[in-house]
Length: 448
Image (cartoon, rainbow, N blue to C red; front, top):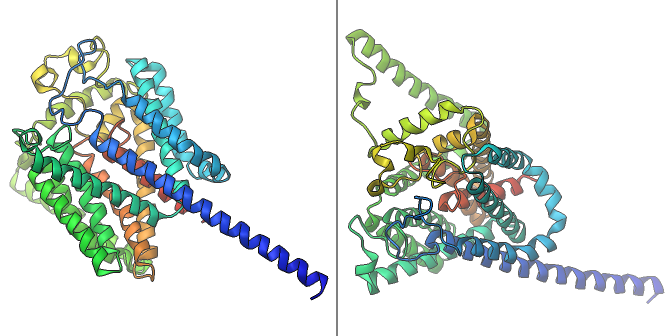
């Protein structure tokens, strides 16, 4: 053996050892990031006060009482994420460049805190969302694979299903409320939202498994999450779940088509919708009927009263808004709703959101924040649907399951925010998960 061949063999063995160590380090970081994701999911879904089914009002602010451990837990999760950010620091410039539109939007949010009604509260909520952002970035660059992200989400959801089932079985009296099953969560609507998320994530994971044993297990988890969803009697979550079950196959079929056929189907759908609207308006014109008459008695569980109030406040500051997160649960001396005698401002009808995420963004961050947020959401919608189109029918079945979550969940949040506020809302389940998935969608397109 010549000296040259000995040297090449030696260098080859060194490269092999370094490559093996790199793979091992990647696996360790992925396990760490997955654990952080599971812990974050459990916390945002359960909260700091398990089984507290009644809202406790803070006597100093008149709003919902904030747990003193909330910020400590989020800072603890950020501390757990710090090693990931350090070891993956080489990925941060590329992520920052890809996330530039989102970072600019956060810059506007920070600017609105300067003229907020309650600057201290507004600043604290912005800092919390920045912490959420850093944790989500750490998780995505730590996992570096949408399939791993999907697995961690499914594991967290399965744990939540097990906890809620055990709570219902062992402590039915505490778990059940007059309105429906709440289990360990603060409200029956919270349980509904958690089980909506669990049913979707675990159902997509079950569908993408390759062995019958794995499929059986995850379909069982999905079924149990649906049972808990029905028991919660959360109408919004039940309606969204039915819409998801109906719409997801249609989305998959459309995204499986060639681009020209896909766009043709979308245009056809838009034309059909426009034709129906035009036909209705023409009928009303011919019969001298009021086109809004069928909607006159609809209040969406009295949401229209809150919407009208929030809209009036938005008109007062249409560009700047009242400050990020600075419209509800702030100093009672300046909170707009508490300056009225509206029914939703009374102690027995506590309301701390507009029940419309887009209205809440408009009134707090103005037109600039609303337009920026909608652009970001549609950016994630387009990216997620593109990932479905790239993976549908491909050899990697598991990759398609993950793409399904990335593509459909933003659509669900888009629909959800017409009746509830979760988009860029601190301590929101759907808002935090959407931020995580949106950053993962951005990461997937860094190379492109």
